[in-house]
Image (tube, rainbow, N blue to C red; front, side, top):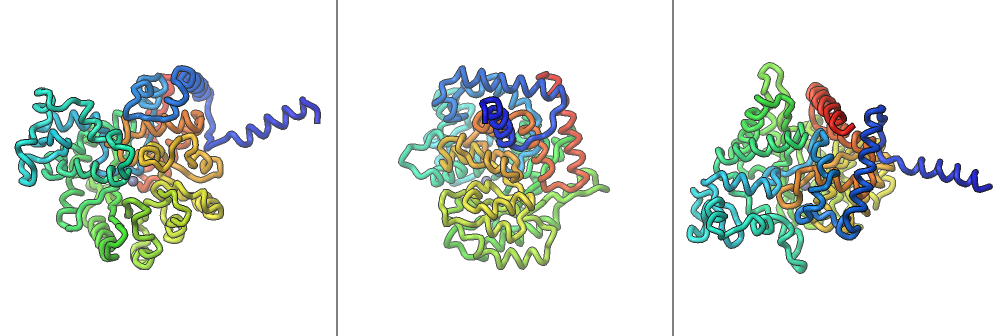
Length: 462
Ligand SMILES: [Zn+2]
């Protein structure tokens, strides 16, 4: 082989191995892709490598003030298929929301939020957030530290810290009026960030009536925002908990509640054209401290027989342990998508089966980084899954304590760390629509909204 032949062969191999997801780009998109390439280059030249690849969105302003971040913020992302109910708003936005709601008071010591009508808090330590900030008792910076994973000390358990954090926000659900406002604010924020469809993974309550009340509040807020923004579609994936040691009747009770809710509540924004509002079921919490799915399989198989159209969107593969093989169960149980699926690399044949059956991974890179499943996002396995034909949609997970801007951070991190081009980004956005739990009609409406926004986006950046 002479050098010319060597170079030709080399170019061919680089091309064969470079394609992540790919999508055909027209001339205008190719021009935007070139701008994107330049933005990535300038970012890599302007921020020190060690700082850049830490991808610390909660503290590093240089990331969000970059032109590339502006590009990702404006990107029409399609759907967020994996985000948890009381974690929708990033902490910075939540500060404004809580400060505007004087029925919410904040403990100045630990920044725990309470509703003033509750009786379980120390009244001497709590006051409305706007007052606490005005009196200098709390600064925005201190609150952000207390509400996000930045406040964790190195020797503290990540998951323990994370679950305690989520507990700080629970009282937002105490009053239906406050919760309604919370969801309205969140849905408007998502639209601003060009996310038109949200699949909220919600652990409502063990009590059915309370679950119904909470689900109705999500729906009312969704309909309120949809009046002015018909492009918005919100769905709920009812979620249950599967803590190790819990009686198996607990996950079953969540599943029964989910199925009852599906009967009792639907998306009837257009009353003569209804759609499912509860689109499936999920089981969650720290996977390494959960009941293995194979023990829950008898229950899930029975329900699959009775309700074959009720989809499973189960958290699994969010583990560093080689012995945690819940992804096998998700496959056998016929899951439509899985939450995370990070450790799929441990099961090469299963990986091919996921690709063949188009089981979509809800990849949440920023969450995986902040919860310490991956130290450096350049090593996140999802980039390899894309090359191997596995279907992926980027999702946000728990923006409140992990992200500066919901989903923008994930697209930014993926683009920089995995060197995504516009063709890959476009396909990831399309996947979030194609593999959503929506029905055919909703998918085509969502697709039309996304295409319009995509063309506007191209006009801005071409
Ligand atoms: Zn999750």
